Length: 151
Image: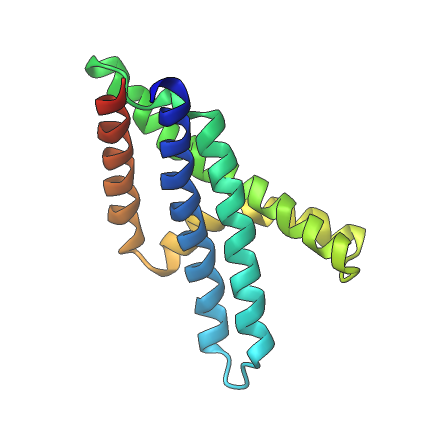
């Protein structure tokens, strides 16, 4: 499959992981609310899709950081795991803002906040659900090893 296969594999892995971070982060607030409406769950789903697209884009663009041989390859994979999730959240926030523009449910101030908050979705999700940290590490290792097998 070559380089395209590696990029698509990285896109799928990181798109799913960034979506999981966003959905869990959003669901924590929804589940804490005593009067949660059905629209809150729809908003969580939309946020997950937007962040999944952002993670896929970041994974596709930064796929070259995964699958390299040796200790340097592992260092690149560690760096890639951090950068892909943060950049994927940033892209996800931008896609969520774009969704707000398309549907007419947005204003400029909240869009910039949404984009900025998207970048820190993963760390905030891990702060509330510490079990996501080891999952993030495991996905990073799996992404590196999977891409290593494709090189």
